[in-house]
Image (cartoon, rainbow, N blue to C red):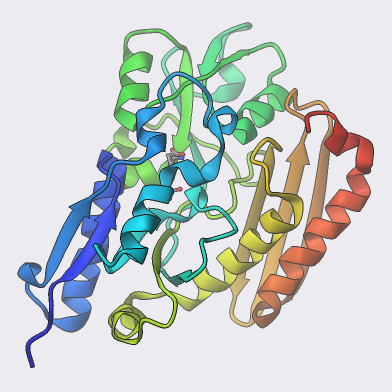
Length: 309
Ligand SMILES: NCc1[nH]cc(CCC(=O)O)c1CC(=O)O
């Protein structure tokens, strides 16, 4: 039987390409197919083009996915490979996240020039990050530091660090590992003091709903525990969302049939922090995430959300 070439859509950043190549490698291995059975199609997105302001200001998460989703719907590609962390909770009609690759380490990595650890940075040092979550967590732990917006792809940020524009930056450990840059890391931040963004460390694959041949291709590379963890985290996010202007963290761990979730919301200055824990059956992942979202919102009270909406 002659199978058509499977078109894999991706952004063109080094990280996105590494993730697309990883997905192709796994598909080749799972189906014993040659590289020629797959074509990697690079698609430029609005998010790639905006470099001078925080993405939360420019319109949020969908900026990295819109053009790729259009290509999926137009059948110019068959699957799209993404960082789960960048995926909006609402997908366009007709599309779904149908597979998650096994999650890598979800922790944030600290890359320090002025000191190897966040707590050891000199008073008033400048840290570059454009993630609202990382900014708020840094300010919570080190209110004396100056946090500056730090955009661009991973390589651009590392160059700015190298040039001395900042004393340190934070990036996802998983992304640095995929780029072969883990050697630069001077500290891995602990999950409790520095909880990750929902979806951090997990590659996901978006497809047209009900595309049976594609789903059959993806089935052997999907990881069930990751899917359950991400379902919980994304449900938490969706309950609090949809703006990405709320500094927010959420992380679920699956142990056999059991799921443990912890979530956090913070004010941008890191002074007010609310935490929530949930646990239960892994098969109840969506309900556990939703309930945690409702409870943390209740805990924080309406005034909390008024502060920046
Ligand atoms: N927003 C960019 C982005 N999206 C996903 C990752 C890291 C890889 C991952 O979480 O799987 C990164 C870079 C970073 O935060 O360092």
